[in-house]
Length: 160
Image (cartoon, rainbow, N blue to C red; front, side, top):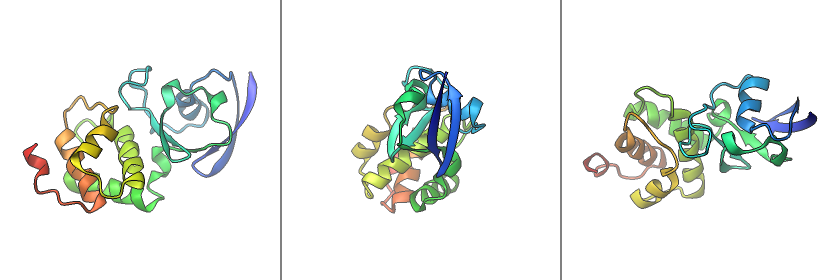
C-alpha cells in the first residue's frame, strides 16, 4: 500500500492503494466515480476511457502509480468543458444511445478527438474511435454526433 495524490476532475484526491491497482478501480471503488465502466479489462473496448492531461487513456490498464501529477478527467466532469457539452448535446440530439454501457467511453474519446481536431473527417473519426466498441452497433449515429458536435456537415453520415 502507498498513498497517491491525484487530480481528478479538478479536485485533489488522496487514496491509499497498491500502486499496481488500475486507475479504473481507484475511480470506481475508492472515489465512487461510477461513470467509467469496466468492459474487457485489457484496453480493447474503450468503456473505461478517461483523459490524462487531455489524452485518451484506458483506465483498466493504467496503474495508479503511473498517473503522477497528470490531470484525470472522467465522464462525470466532461460536461464542464465547452467541447464536452457539445458532444453530450449531440449524443442526445442524434439519439446515439441504445443500451448506453459504452457511451461514457465513446463520449470521452469523441471529446478528445474534437479537442485535437475541431473539424474531423470520417477517416479521422474512424481512427480516433477505433478502440471503442459498441455492442449495439450505433457507429453511424456516433459518427453523426461527432460531426454535429464539431459543426461538420452530416448529410452523408447516415449513408455509411
